[in-house]
Amino acid sequence: MSDDAGLQALREAARLSPDNLPLRRHLAGQLLAQGYLADAEAEFRAALVLAPKDPGITAGLAEAFVRQSAHGSALAALEPLLAEPGYPPALGVLAARALLGEGDTARAGYRYHEAISRDPSVADADLAARLSPPPAPSHAAPAQPQGTADPVAPPVTPYGAPAPPYGVAPGPVAPASGPGASAEVEHSKLSFADVAGMDAVKEALRVKLLLPLQQPELFAAFGKRAGGGVLLYGPPGAGKTHLARAAAGELGASFVNVGLADILDMYIGSSERNLRATFDLARRNRPCVLFFDEVDALAARRSDMRQAHTRQLVNQFLAELDGVDQHANEGVLVLAATNAPWYVDVAFRRPGRFDQPVFVPPPDHAARAAILRILCRDKPLAEMDFDAVARITDHFVGADLKGVVDRAVEAKLHQSISAGRAIPLTTPDLLAAAQSVRPTAVREWMATARNYVMHANDSGTWDELMPWVKGKW
Ligand code: ADP
Picture 1 (cartoon, rainbow, N blue to C red):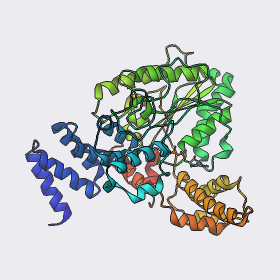
Picture 2: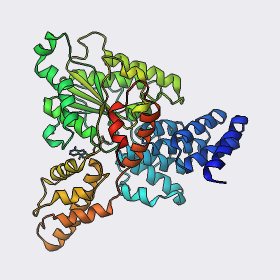
Picture 3: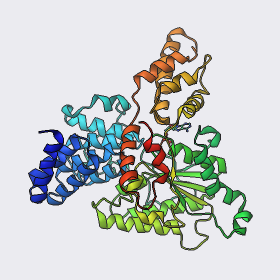
Picture 4: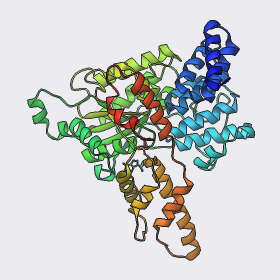
């Protein structure tokens, strides 16, 4: 029997016995193993209804999310279990993968090392290579299972970082503190010149964000007012955060960067207060770009986990975004980013909110060369052929290219230390580093996007993605 026929039989059996938990669990596992990620997700959800909080099923669901780049949703799924002392270490590894997918290397590292210290058999060499070495257990998050925290230690969020200083009345500028501080005010020195490629995206942001503030009379003449938000979406590592930071710098605005998973992490009931405090922080620092990363974690439309609580948070978020009056958010530009736009609640896309999602694409050849040039510009360089490196880094996004440059620089630093002088970086250094770095999941992301564009695009929401998903990945 072929795999597909086997699966077909299993699906049929599950349809006939919807309450047969072992069968549904088996079907879900098979779907996951064979890469039918959306179907696996649906099956794991169905199984979770039969056995809420089952760690194996939760792990399967989280894995299906991670492989679809829905990292925020994976973390939301894992959160209730991670909050319990002695949770299965395999879940910690999954959380680490999701956190890494969100670019949160520090917390991914805590999670991973905490998990393998309890069960070395869950080690994942590939993941370990992408993480930094275990952090020294100093003032930051102790590698300690949740729920067993020392009562005098700082509060710890379910993902292992100390809770941010919300609840403490924030001053005019929030303190910049350790890894758990999720809302702090930055003054970005980046501008659009520091963002390679993405001309169409930069233009869209200019019109939507910058021009209304720079030329208010023009916008007023057409009855438009500044405000609302822009939803940036695209594969992880393609530069959404970088772009948001550059938009703030371009505008001379302050920048507040919030991981939504952080807000969700915090003690139940305080999340609404944290959200309000975050918007207030931005309002006190206007003009301000308020950036919400992993917005799918809040707007997990299809997630039935903690639904009532999530719904309440979505409403609060939208109320803050709409503002109590038309001046409430003047000078506050809200950018949100997601790797999984299909999970974002449609209420977010109503006019005046995030009504124009903007796709941040993976870089093409020319953009990769330009990103490499930017990443290398403050390093000692020999004559460089960035085009040659761009040619062998198909499917690499900005974050991957940063990994390549970091690796090459590290090797060069060792050589320079031995030689006692700075030895410039060369093209072969970058080529060698590129060969040892594996690109992140752009191909998988495109496969997921293709599913949505082809099968769930009735309203034309994903038209912009059409030419991309039809390309070769
Ligand atoms: P995302 O938010 O989409 O996951 P990031 O903005 O965190 O991705 O990108 C990771 C890093 O890659 C950035 O810090 C930046 O150094 C680099 N990068 C990504 N895209 C670009 C770009 N277009 N130009 C210059 N650097 C980039």
